Image 1: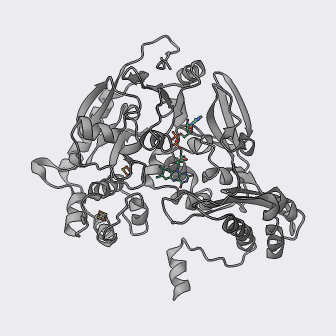
Image 2: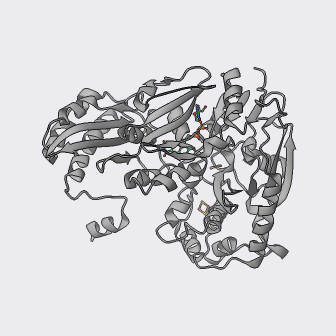
Image 3: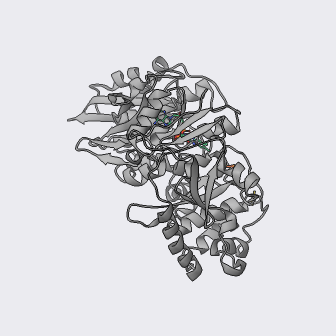
Length: 502
Ligand SMILES: Cc1cc2nc3c(=O)[nH]c(=O)nc-3n(C[C@H](O)[C@H](O)[C@H](O)COP(=O)(O)OP(=O)(O)OC[C@H]3O[C@@H](n4cnc5c(N)ncnc54)[C@H](O)[C@@H]3O)c2cc1C
Ligand code: FES
Ligand code: FES
């Protein structure tokens, strides 16, 4: 396939090199394969081997680096990401800080490095750079180092040797540590350097075989993709990165949503909250989490901070996965998906987007341009994720549910499951059995039996068909108990569990 020429709609030029800052030094990178990952480049081209390759699939965090940008108010923001699944083109206009870039003048250790040493948190050593970088981004953003947040901060960094206690203690010790003056000065310089490389030019990098296009506005993106619909749309690359590192797939031309200005917004309309293609899980969680605590709890268990910092909400729908966490929740909320081909837009209920396993209602040249989440959903919305591990695991069964009650009767029910069929799918027989029934636990217990009519699930490594059926039935019952006011223990709540055990 030919490489993908970005056409600036105004006929303007497309830059053929990247500009970003690495550990304080501006880089100009050209003639590079579109599928080159940041980790590979750091280690092989720059001999920066502090960032390690553990899994090469975003799971272990040994490759964690910080990506620094400025926000709308001009303040610096730090994001931890897994360098093994970040493509080089995604760095345009950013600063990257690796473990080699942390220390101060005269090799003075950064407080995050020192804390790990002081608390004996560097055990095997291989995973240590990743832990340091996760602590560093949390410290730099000034959150994530409180006792209740530290597990979240470190959930994307695996320690398989000795244990997390000294690492957690090192993290907690940083809560009140003072930022050294040299770091404050360095941040001021970084702000200025980021300002200098700021640009709205579209970029395309290629080694002649694999290209990566970085359009900057919606028209360029739409036109470029409509002209070459066989190219691969990349958003956070938390799926696509693995196609390259694990499946050795050849992706001759990729086009990135991440720098298109209009795509990074969460728009508020009277009836809808609209999440655009480049909005990451972390950003969506920060904005929407307080509105729906149940989806906030789900997001906290979505991958890890690193995965949520890169992966997008729209990517989680567009990938068509039957076990994606968000589709059941967003379907239960009654969301619409918007698809765009050049200037043509259409919207459909999210559940209709998923036709069958591996097939979605998306025509050639169309891309997902937004997800419209109804603003006014009642208090009865819940979502529950069942997975083998609490953090950083894909669901075995995922349920999103919502219902309306008038007087004492159920008048509307939307119950949707992931992990039970080839697509995210509504449990229509359960829904029917709930309609017009009294709003009491018994109605949910009876209706839950209809799971057997709705689904014939698969057995796979995540769970047997029998487990899935029983788990889904139990989730319907749990939902009923929870809504009707019975006490349902929340095993994710440490205080509740401690009380139950004592
Ligand atoms: C370690 C790890 C943990 C994970 N944990 C979870 C988890 O807990 N729950 C879960 O559901 N998923 C999980 N995932 C999967 C993944 O992170 C999510 O599905 C994520 O939301 C994908 O979004 P992305 O932006 O990274 O997509 P990408 O990898 O960029 O793209 C995914 C697919 O969507 C297409 N695409 C992306 N954006 C668009 C668009 N705007 N229009 C059309 N097509 C588009 C791409 O072409 C590709 O086919 C995990 C992944 C990793 C690596
Ligand atoms: S090498 Fe394991 S997350 Fe990157
Ligand atoms: S400290 Fe490296 S695996 Fe535990």
